[in-house]
Length: 202
Image 1 (cartoon, one colour):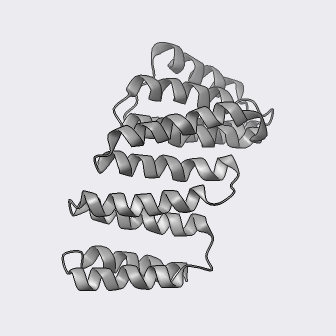
Image 2 (cartoon, helix red, strand yellow):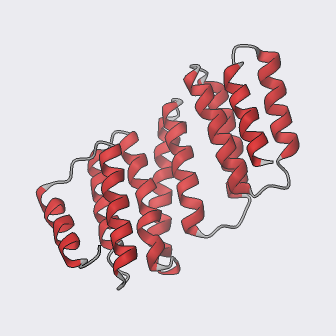
């Protein structure tokens, strides 16, 4: 079902300028996804919003983002599952022009993590922070993005086992590279220190 809906999302994009076909594709998606997990529905909604933005249709993108955010807010989530979706929607909202609300949503996501940090298993904390940092960078706040990445780096070394520490270190470095975030001297030194402490074979 997910593969079929993703195909419909591609048709939504391909025939975007044909309102009748585009609407038909979206209608079929929404009529068929009720039995899927909400996370999958939100991921498909993100595809639709990205298509709308690619076609310079900010109002439609915001409509899809609003619907997806309402679905998230109506459900119960583990914080590590909710946060990446909220961060991605905030990015899309920002790109669609609703910058103040987008910033408020990502600020709220960071604050919620800080309040509920202890409820997140240590191996998931860095992965919860990374999408928040990415969203701040997309919104043009490199300073907060860098400080959030710094927090993610420290969260990634809380588990005593080398494998999750190595995976988090790699994922955080890759995220910074992909989002053009340059670590300052202190963070670069800390990354090197963590890498040196991993030991073989990491």
